[in-house]
Length: 149
Image (cartoon, rainbow, N blue to C red; front, top):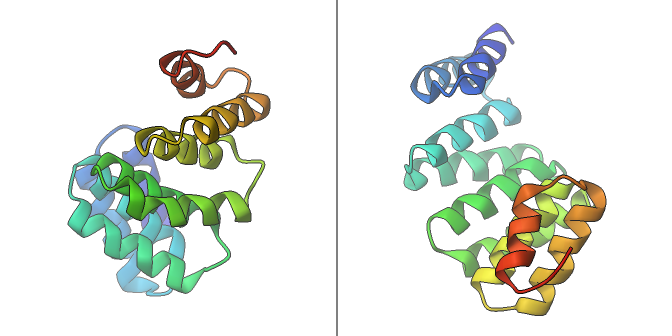
């Protein structure tokens, strides 16, 4: 836990390289630590290393298939990589597992927007705002799609 916790501190400070080292150490000590895989995947994705992030998200999902975060994070990584169609099933799964999580709904909205599914994107951006009224990404998404909040 100490390495995982310190990795989170480094991550919070934007020091992904140091966070990756600590998450890797946590995984070596506890190979079934799904959250460590997920967080390391987020760090890799933030660095644009999607080829390294995806296996970590997949391993987290394998270990904890009922945990929404790795599905959402893998969906968002696909989105960042310009592979929205591949991310949509994960976004749908994240929303199914945690429908009241504005982050999950917002990720799916962004994917729908990129896929040209305007009505679904608008509905999800509005749902994200209903869950998190100050969600800047949802507000910007609605503006991009010519909608008011």
